[in-house]
Image (cartoon, rainbow, N blue to C red; front, side, top):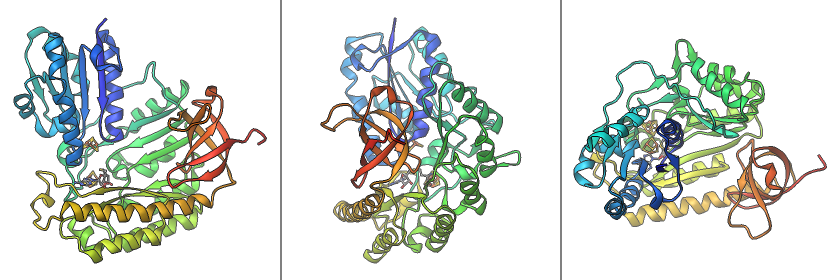
Amino acid sequence: MPNFYLKTYGCQMNVYDSERMVHLLKPLQFTQTEKLKEADLILFNSCTVREKAKQKLLSDLGRLKSFKEKNKKLIIGMGGCVAQEEGDRLLKRIPHLDLVFGVDQVDQLPELIGRIQETKSRLAVTAFDTDPKFSLSYVRKDFSPVSAFITIIKGCDKFCSFCIVPFTRGREKSRPPREILQEIELGVEKGTREVTLLGQNVNSYAHEGYTFPKLLRLIAQVPHLKRIRFTSPHPQDFCDDMIACYEELPNLCKHLHLPVQSGNNRILKAMRRWYTIEHTQERIEKLRSKVPNVALSTDIIVGFPGETHEEFEDTLKLLRDIRYDSIYSFKYSPRVGTLAYEFSEELSEEEKNERLQRLQSLQDEISLEMNQKLVGQTYEVLVEKKSLGLAHAVTLQGRTDTNKLVHFKGDASLIGKFTRVRLTSAMPHSFLGDENLGN
Ligand code: SAH
Ligand code: SF4
Ligand code: F3S
C-alpha cells in the first residue's frame, strides 16, 4: 500500500485543511506515515505569513531532492499559502516539485494526484473559487478529536497593510450555519467535546441574516458540546452582542484572543487597523466587568516601519494597562504585495530583536504574576495528551476553560476526558497541578 506524509505549517486553518486532505486521500488507499523516507506522496501545507515561515518551508522542500532521486514514483506536492502566493513559479524554481495546489483546490487533491500519476506531468492549479457560496462537504468519518477545529469563514477583506493573508486566502465567504452545525453534531456524536471556530475574522461572519453571535447561540445548543472557542475576532467588530454571548452561553470558554497588534494609534492607522487603543480598552473593560475572570490574549507586531521608540513604549504601556494573560508577538516581516512593503522606514533587525525581547520579558513578568494568583484553585481541565519535557512519571497536559496549560501526573486513560486539577505552581506559560480526586 502506498504511504503519504503530510506536514502542516502556519495557522489552525491550515490544520483544518490538512485534516480534510487526510480524509480525501483515504479512498486512494494511501496510508499516512510519519516517516518521510517511507512516503510515496509528500505533501506540505504551507504558510507565508512571515518571511521566516516561508524560508523554513522552502528549505524543508529543498531537502527532498534526494528522496525523489531514490524513489522515482514519489510525488511531491505543496498546498496552502506559499502555493497560493507563488503558483506555477514554484514549479520552475523547484524542479523536484510535482504539484502546486491553492487553498481552494483542497477538494480536488485526489483528482490532481490521479492526473499526475496517469500523465506523469507536473501541475500548478491555484485559481480562487469564484462561487459566491462557501460550502465544504467535509464530514469527519473516522476521525473525531475531542477538541476539533472548524472553519466557519474563509478569506479576509480587511487588507491590513502588513498582511499577506487577503492575497493568499482571497475574499471573505461564510459557510452556511446548517453545514457548520451538522459537522459539529456529527463530531459530538463520536466524542468531540470542544470546538474552535476558525476564520481570519470570525466576527465578520455573515450568512443570510446569521451574524457571528447568532451562530454562537445556535452552536451553544448542541447537546454534550462542553466548550466553544473561536479565533480570531477583530477588535473593530467586537460588538456588545459578542459580550452578551459570554454572559449567556455557559459553554463559551472564558477566554478571548483579540489581536491588537500595537499600542499606538498612529501605528494602528498605518497598519490599516481601523480602531483605536481607547476603543479596544473600552471593549475589554466592558467584557471584564460582565465576565470577571475572563482570560485575555493578543497578537503584537513590533518594529512596524517607522515605529518610534515612544510608539513602541506605548505598546509596552498597553500590556501593563490591560494585563493580558498571554501574547503572541512577532517582529514585523515585510511581505511582497502588501501596502507596508512599500513603506521606506524599515527598522534594523537588531532594533526589532531588541524590541521583541523587551516586549516578551515584560509580558513574561505579567503572565507569571497573573498565573501566580490562580495557584491553589481547582479547574476542570480537558486532557489533551502526554506532556513532553517533564522529568516525572506519566505527565499529562490539558487546558482550562480559560485556556491555561496545565501539566499534572495522571493515568493516560484520562486523555480526551475532563478532570479536575488543582493548580500547585505557576510559570509564565503553564502550570503544574494535581488531579483533584476529592472534588
Ligand atoms: N486575522 C488575524 C491575524 C492572522 S495572522 C487578525 O487580524 O488578528 C496572525 C498574526 O500574525 C497577526 O495577528 C499578526 O500579529 C502576525 N502577522 C501577520 N502578518 C505579519 C507580518 N507581515 N509581520 C509580522 N507579523 C505578522
Ligand atoms: Fe491579515 Fe488583517 Fe486580515 Fe487579520 S484582519 S488576516 S491581520 S489582513
Ligand atoms: Fe499562514 Fe496562510 Fe494561515 S499565511 S497564518 S497559513 S492563512
